[in-house]
Amino acid sequence: MFTLPPVRGTLTIQRPLADLTWMRVGGPAEVLFQPADIDDLSGFLAALDPVVPVFPMGVGSNLIVRDGGISGVVIRLGRGFNAISIADGAVSAGAAALDAHVARKAADAGLDLTFLRTIPGTIGGAVRMNAGCYGTYVEDVLASVTVVQRDGSITELTPDDLHLAYRSSVLPEASVIVAARFAPRGDDPAALVHRMTEQLAKRDETQPTRDRTAGSTFRNPAGYSSTGRADDTHDLKAWKVIDNAGMRGAMLGGAIMNTKHSNFLTNAGGASAADLEDLGELVRKKVYASQGITLHWEIMRVGKRTGDDTAK
Image 1 (cartoon, one colour):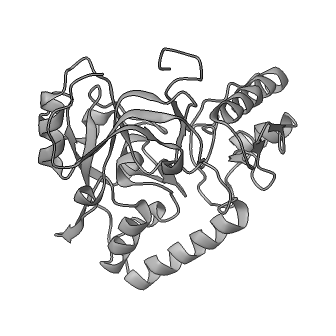
Image 2: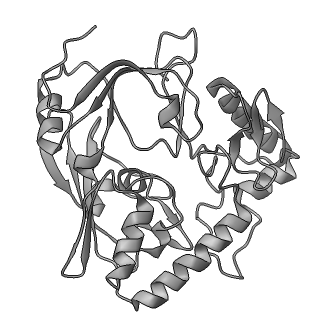
């Protein structure tokens, strides 16, 4: 066991992570660190042996933790990182702020971050994945990002520094996003609230929001999110190619490709992380075999499989 620096937050050894993920699966973190604030996080990383791996974790909405758990330190940001402030047409939010809360606060101030309203998870994850829907992405509104790097230094990055692309970004190795600032366009608050209400209704109609999922399982092969427009083609959407491969409703152990929306890998009850990941890999093979299309995971899969001594 490696030496842990003193902190003002909370350190927990061998903390089970299943209850911290939306899928409710996975093994423990070797150490779970919940820092009190940015200075606590910075000091901890600066003092932690640089060979110890660290993994920043949000609310587990886009994550499968493998059954063998995660080696090193898992960092989970909490109340010290969820503040939201609005000034001079800009929205600043801590990385632990929920996307939906940020969207609502912005709308009340007449600023359009409505696309975030239906995206599960936190601002840190939204920036990391360049989250988007209805034709708008984080990259369209992002002004700057604050990160704590692995050596404890605090750095402000521009969108160009992140090389944002479809469902991806480039961050300094083992850095932790702690805050982001957005510069959205203005609009009438009532119109923004109405738009979010419509988007929520559409999401609940088409997606299994009450099931144990981690959001979209695979990236769309076409390389863009749904625009919501009438002319939006479905030919290269992930759910469409999964359906074409006959994998809607496919099951493995306690895992199922959801019958309501086949790009939602679901814990139907008693699934292990291996069940979920193996079913996802089976879907990828079937899609490639039937259509020559390689699906890429959107859900992050981290940690060790049971019996494996190395993290993947």
